[in-house]
Image 1 (spheres, rainbow, N blue to C red):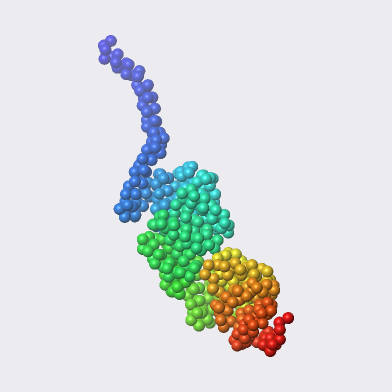
Image 2: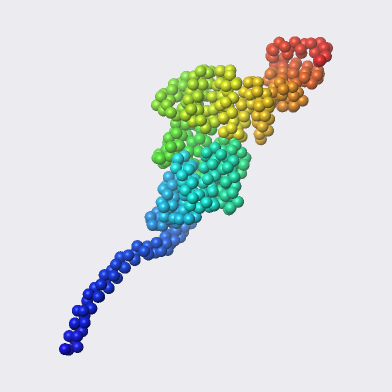
Length: 509
């Protein structure tokens, strides 16, 4: 047999084996992309992140987002960076989606960070899933920075501000930067430490000037402490830099309400609601602005018109605590105690944590229904919810004093009058009254002198100061204070009788 014939036979015999080898190679080739995909995609995703950072540095954030969105489809790290970029622009809903997707592709500390950041965003948007996300973050990375920050927000949101502060301080100590400082500012704000919250937010802004969360937080603190005019330009700058900053628009609406420009605030609130289609707070804010517009009518003396508008708004939105609160306030202006209490009781049923609603309910019960003992409950809830609010603390102390709970009144009012910048004559007068009733005359004199200095035409304060001097058997000062009270129209018969007797030369016994 010729050599070529042998080769042909050998080839025929080898064909099945070669075919089997080729099938194995084809199988390997099909399996290879699946097995090698993660390692092959990682460098590509890293390149995408670098490219996005370069575009961001060049000032083209939209292009950076486009690059990251493409990479995030296959890589969790790119998705995490996409989320942080979206969040820095105030685009919380897209940031939430990015963090969710990233968490599904990551593990360990990176997963914990994605879930922690997700929880913080959800908490800011009032989403119920925030609690589950925070717990999942801790499960992924128990001692991680962002899981700790997330739990700080959760504890604060759940009414445990002290725990929120402790967790945020832990995150700050761990080098958490602007995120940890912002969490600390939030916890301190809820706790009632406005000065501490302001300092923390300013430190966060200094650490990361482009971060939106601390800017919005600082604006809120400024508004709450009567400096809304200072907050407005900060928010405008943030909105100009990040047109999708829903949280900034929401706070801007509240700032404009505080500045008495509810009509302008409505435009910001509507824009926030349009951009944040799944944010439950946004439509509630629109309602809040509408209520503010009606209350401006009340301030302008058009109370009946405002009540008519608010009644219509209430009938359309019976479960809105904001509408009930506004209607209750309008009835207070009209001195209609029964109607005010009915609306405000419904407001606190709908939103028990609404400190303002609790305060106005207490105010109506005390000042309109003349029931200070019944007013103590809601006023205490308001003061507890906002311990740094001097108005709420003073109202509680005054109600306690008039309800004859003098020991508690002195405790509450002593703390109130020690608040920074406190200048409420009513608080000092009520504290002095409580001291007099407890026969603590020496302690009564300085606070009553403060009350009469702040409100020199307050006849009741002068009379109470007179009784304090009477208790100290100081006839000269009793006559001086009593004479001031009488000149201002004080008419209480017993006091005036004693004053006449001492002025006639009788000694205080």
